[in-house]
Length: 306
Image (cartoon, rainbow, N blue to C red; front, side, top):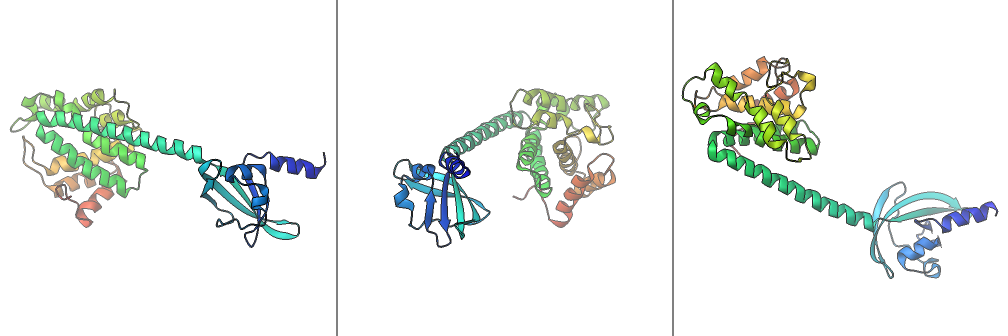
């Protein structure tokens, strides 16, 4: 078998459709797969106009109405070459109809799964709200600020999703903290604070059994960790704290300080921003702090506005 026969054999047995189209768009050659893909014979191709836009060096998709296979979707690649002393387009088409069907099914399944996750989160927050309306309202406001910070940081969508879900759930463990402490009027004792400081672990225990596609349990247990290791419950340092937890940690402090608590009145947003600025690089991530301050000082961010 000579080189020409080998080459022709490769073309004829190629699983992709291959066509040669001249600069005027007229088809000069097709392989058997092109006949099968379009449901046309070689004679019906040769000398006729191809009819699809040809962009050299780009990968695109075209729809093909085949008399044998119905409506198909093909991925098209076009290169230029010299053939019989004339400039031609070499068009390669790959049938991706099945791939697209699977892709759409996967996207539908993923969206359904996300809906289930959101419903689960909503149910958990609803349970917390019935016991402690303050906690639920706080979580919603923290989520609003944390998600805005994540958006300004231009994080990937999966991280933004993680920030949003974790923010809503970060204090869910407070349902295990006694009402007498959560709603205590006046100052809290050291013992009271020790009881409150158990809530990240309880939050972790509640959500760890849910098979989220994000590390939600690890994020919620870390939202009170601080860069210098002075946080709780694990005294983690900067490099061991998830970015999502760092974002929620800053949002949590700002919202908590600027809101009324049963044991004290609001300290105001200025005091809250002063806290994170003064402890930037020590307790709080500097990038997160700078974005948070900019939101309030230059972009008129508000917990109450939509």
